[in-house]
Length: 298
View 1 (tube, rainbow, N blue to C red):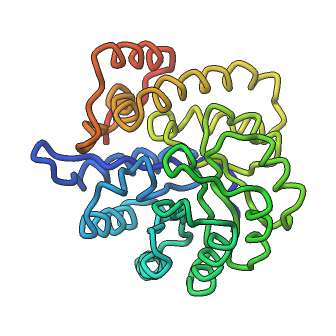
View 2 (cartoon, rainbow, N blue to C red):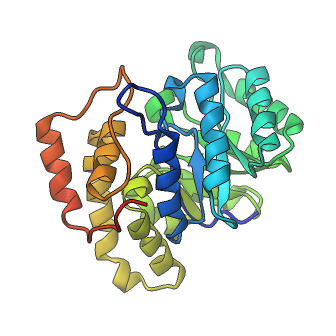
């Protein structure tokens, strides 16, 4: 299964009463269908998955499957704190027609977690899963990191096909690329190091920034893929700055605000996440103004 390319990490829009806005969610997907993205990720960190009820999460999985264009890969975030619950969620995603499961590291009992914990956790999930598994290391949210020896060991499992590494550490991409089986695919989760990640061995990216700027992220991947590094020199810098302001500093609210500015349905995040301050809105608006307007909402 080829994961080369760009995957937007889908956001979850809400109606004014706080309920999940499936109509807006599908409208966003219709827009992504018209871009060169390889596919989309549902129920990732950017989708506020930890703030959703089980019923809401299920409704988003169903809606995405209904709205995604043929040929677009759909990846479901299925990671939970327990191995058993992760297996249950992964099997459910498979039953709904998802091709891949993105499984974040458990983290709540981190003082008790050692390498052997993660090895057994992921191997147990991969053994039970009817669909391939992507490891997901996102230390900014979990406080734990899958290190190179753990990743390389897990890469030997035939049902673990890759990793989304959101650490932003290029050295780890190089190390894993050199030691893991050649079929193992590395995707970066950091737009700030997008071009260096590609040149160091990453095949693609799952990005919050691609929710607001999908066509620009795809453009950078295409330039790199075709060896047009001279043409790509300015774009990585622009996307890195945009990622810093919109994603790193603005968080989920920043991504959603940038989406609103570009004609997508963004809206407000769910409490306890707070809306942007006026100062941050102005900074994001200034960054977004440097990119050509996206098409109007579907």
